Length: 307
Image (cartoon, rainbow, N blue to C red; front, top):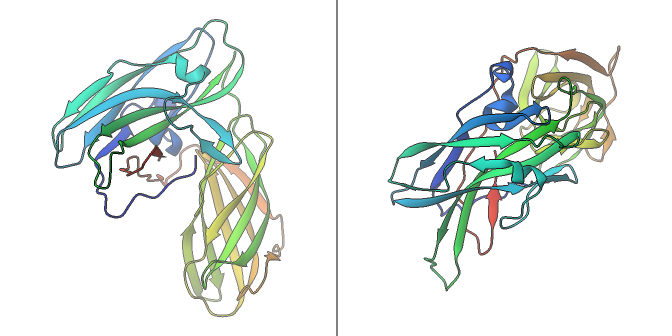
């Protein structure tokens, strides 16, 4: 889904995070913040999440699962409690909790795949929600929720591969004074991608960055998406070497090229000698992607956030 920023006047009140990570995925940054797994029909897994009341008031928190999908390269959830096939397989063993200020509790999650489940990857979300009747400007119910994504692949045999390629780099003027470098990424694997990564620029003895990916992109198998990285630093004019390192989970790819600054109009980044992208898979990333799991959003209907 597209992340929605919270009202600066609102302080975070509840957060949710993963507690259990399978041993086979301990080096996977995505498994640190989401439920990502592969199950055969008829299998069941159990996980735990932890919810915390970070506010100064006692909170009654509801827990439930809801449907999700990937649309226009974004992990998307509907408003309300709309479900789907996967959310119907998820059971939260705690429906409600009342937490004092600062208190945190674990919540057990069970995912049971039916024997006759068809092959394929499915998406859902696990929600912690606070509903309040108090409204500063009228009789409008406030609904605040934070969630954890669920990516579950179902099928016989082992887990399908995750893979992608970087098909080219480009640059364009940004909304402000800084340029934006984009990378076209094509999902060549069989599982959805959540793109992270960095960009570094070098000119003679000067290095700028690393600059982080600035848009959250989820790309379905066989689809392509644009990953954007804002170069939010003033740099001298001239030709710079570009080094883009993108990743989804433990799979990492590199693209290199040259960029001429300043960028006055959209341009293709010329590739340096050798291949424009290098392929290798990292069994365990040294870099742990830190993601904020929780959020507190004031809305007149539903506003939601994921890590």
